[in-house]
Image (cartoon, rainbow, N blue to C red; front, side, top):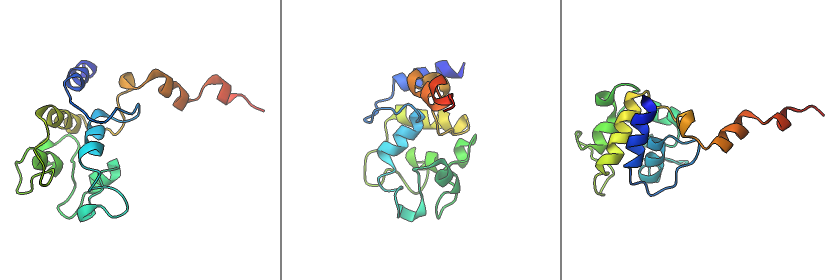
Length: 137
């Protein structure tokens, strides 16, 4: 059931970055719109959204995401402009389709990787190890 929900949402998302096989669609949105400021060696306000750990740790205002709880997730409240801080800063609000992807992602526990059924089958097979890679010398 989740597969159909995600496929419907992803089909309607206007992402400017190509999905990487391992990235969840919400992570691609974060990389596209947030990580430029909230990533790298010195992220703004010490909020690093380039990793799940960084998003869970959060910055000066607390955790950016609270898996399963959209209303407690500052990330969601800032991108929907339901917070005193509105993100992305000095830019238009994210498209509604992108906000919906992030909402569903947080509700589903904020997994960093794409669901297995959305990954490129070749990349999934290679990451698990092909029979050739398991041969002994």
